[in-house]
Amino acid sequence: MTSTTEPAQPLSVDQLSATTLLRFATAGSVDDGKSTLVGRLLHDSKSVLADQLEAVERASASRGHNGPDLALLTDGLRAEREQGITIDVAYRYFATPRRRFILADTPGHVQYTRNMVTGASTAELTVILVDARNGVVEQTRRHAAIAALLRVPHVVLAVNKMDLVGYQESVFAAIAEEFTAYATELGVPEVTAIPISALNGDNVVEPSAHMDWYGGPTVLEHLETVPVSHDLAHCHARFPVQYVIRPQTPEHPDYRGYAGQIAAGTFRVGEQVTVLPSGRTTTIAGIDLLGTPVDVAWTPQSVTLLLADDLDVSRGDLIVPSKDAPATTQDVEATVCHVADIPLTVGHRVLLKHGTRTVKAIVKDIPSRLTLDDLSLHPHPGRLVANDIGRVKIRTAEPLPLDSYADSRRTGSFILLDPADGTTLTAGMVGESFGSPEPVEDRADDDGWDF
Image 1 (spheres, helix red, strand yellow):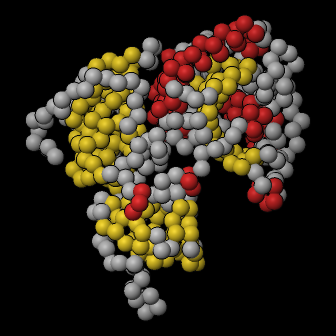
Image 2 (image 1 turned 135 degrees about the vertical axis):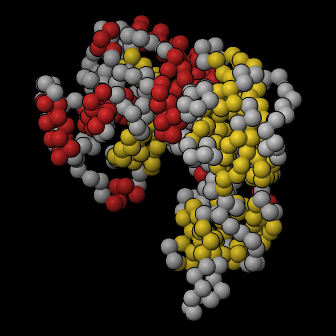
Image 3 (image 1 turned 90 degrees about the vertical axis):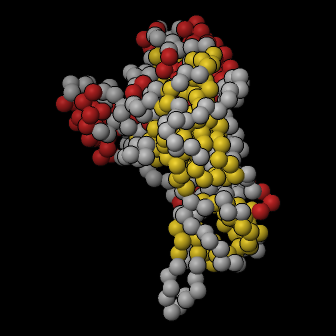
């Protein structure tokens, strides 16, 4: 296959400002064709620069391919190219006249499920690939479960390699029915199934001439038209403090500002706010944005808040509107995805990182583990191993202001860290659950580290 793609033409500033932004991620099992799909998407939408395409063509020729191996556009690590698998999350930025995109191409191997969690955590849409020859497999179910846990609003089932099953409608229909039924049980709000051949370009950017029985959108058409309704500016306003600014210069002798990125919502000068976890209240005296005073700021702007009163505010504190402050608690119940090779066990001493705050914590109980085959809950497993999804109860050394993950994906999530070396152990979603396991009593710890 010889490429005739012209160099990508960048959109004008006016074109970019008139388009919306969609963050989406790809997922699927090994060899389902994720990287090829992404490469085909970039290639056929003319989003590949000439020098990038030339480099891929040279690499493909050295491997004996007749045409460009489009998977190489995203498999950038040397180990990825040598093994032919995706290992790390590959982020790509591209745009069409209708929309801008931030794409996270995530690994399919079960060993790298943690990377899929990372890539999908901020996505508004997830494309889950399935090999038409293999259908829905365990890793497909795992990725669907993670998409549901992370409350990704839109899921696309891309049934790939349709060319290898003779473009049969019956094969596609059976896979789409099985996956949709499973995703619905998980609580996925929307599933769009599209039959494709990423290698040949069928239904990726252009409609397929081999599947006239399919009347739905291509992958790109769906990406360009799916509604992007999750507006963080209208969520509960939350401002995690990252840094305290006190220049103490002759020009600014009394300046005390609190810098950070607005996690959600909008803040205004004169608004009454509460600093958590202390609970002290004050008002916003000023907002500095890039050194310029403004009256209002919203997510995801990075700003400095000036408060009317001198309060003890430090990194890790959360500034919120007084009329919309979350409750603080030391008892955390959440659904988690364990991503480390070290098991998470009852009594495990960890660090819990929530926003910019990190506190000591103990795993008090693991009430259940999710069985992906039938979505049943295995009670009291005692531990979670890599890639397990389960419920946990955690006791923290200090109170934390936690939102429900259903209300805020930013301030309703956390990670557990190994206190010895800072390794990420677990990603957690406050309050999320696939079922209602029977309540259990907290179990006492015998290591003396009890809060």
